[in-house]
Image (cartoon, rainbow, N blue to C red; front, side):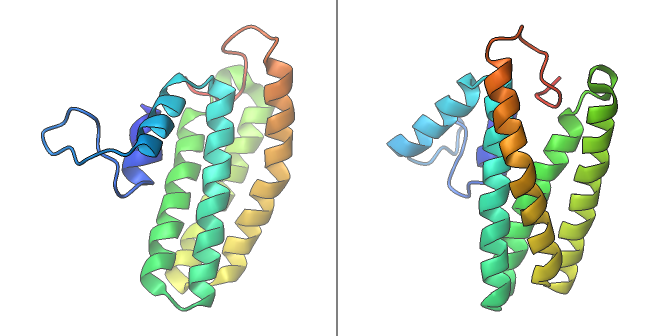
Length: 158
């Protein structure tokens, strides 16, 4: 399920509503949870890309500020998103495009690991640049897919 990925992994305060150890959930958290659970598959991909960009940007800032713990946490969150994108690619239906995305996501993941191990902003900036290049293409694809039959977007989940 995507909600734990977006909130459990990426949001330190989020807990599933109704769990025994639930903490008070503010209105924004409830809104984001509902948004994630009701979004179309393409919109979820866009949310993941935007989240990855936000986290890798924060990681770069933390590296530059020599805040090792913060850099580590933000890079891990970015790695989680990229891993999720890899896991949800449908290479059978997506063909060559999905295979190319899988290779690119794998490369991004390796660069993020390198950035985290070395606390080096260069590989993180490279991933940031790749995500920035891909986001407009995904936005265009989602716009086009809004009129297409459901389930035809590559990487929008299985």
